[in-house]
Figure 1 (cartoon, rainbow, N blue to C red):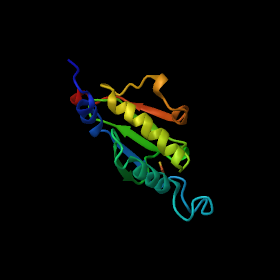
Figure 2: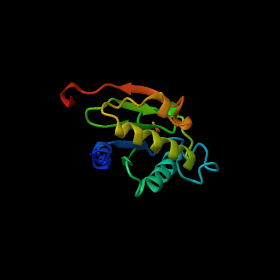
Figure 3: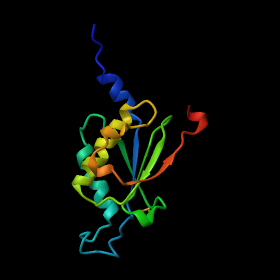
Figure 4: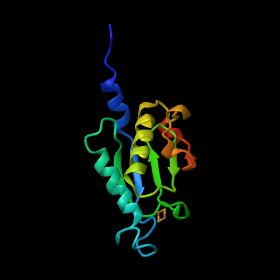
Length: 139
Ligand code: FES
């Protein structure tokens, strides 16, 4: 007998939080490239648009400055009981948003936050800055 996995996949991915720095690549430093808005807010907007209605999409949270300013645009991927990841150097584009969501979906499907390298979209390679261990009380 086959057991549908979709409900389990949905449960695993629902608790993934994707925090997006909204102040990265500030408009003041490059207003022409950013259409008067920060790169981070444009990346957040692209992520929110693509995540809407997408199965396995993380909850997207906007946050000012993740203290990874030298690596803008920066994001933080985390979930209770899973290793977390700080990543950056993303362009505020739909292409970057798609890569982030593809990787985050694979992260949500994993039991521990370890995504096999073979599943990494090209747009995520070379963007990770730090791996954040699981808090002991979360295990
Ligand atoms: S402004 Fe984005 S990490 Fe500091």
